[in-house]
Length: 206
Image (cartoon, rainbow, N blue to C red; front, side, top):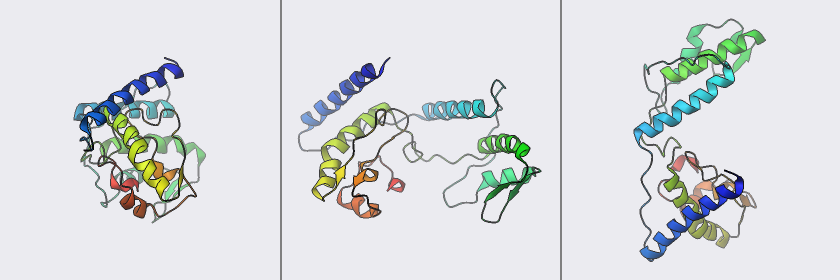
């Protein structure tokens, strides 16, 4: 499918969302359902496959069952795992800065990081909090940004840049209007209150 076809498909999906909004009148319809647990696992598995192929092309990807899940604000179990391997030529400082003293150790480090990532993944409390969205959710966000958030930001005196092609393609949200403002601003928390994003955009993004 070429870029023009992708654009036509996306415009068709957006038209469906616009029609839903029109039927809903002034009320804001609830966001569409997100990815299921099995769909999230499939996304993570594909991401791991691409990562492993970059590390060791042609080699069979290792699979490790989770030992423990990492949580926000908790100990960095992945780095502890990598550090425990004791790779010669790799040194970690107390603030988790990595120093490579032997270039040949880089591949060993990448392999260890991959496997420690499998053993100590982040606990996913919701797909959206982890940055995973269904295509229906992303179509919903594209319309919500265009019809509500962008005009609100413009009313505050900002010019909002256009989202790049593919910014609303599952499973990841690739564009937020708050980061594409002219003049740029670091006062994102204020903008998030004045021009709040849809509820499925997690607060850590602002």
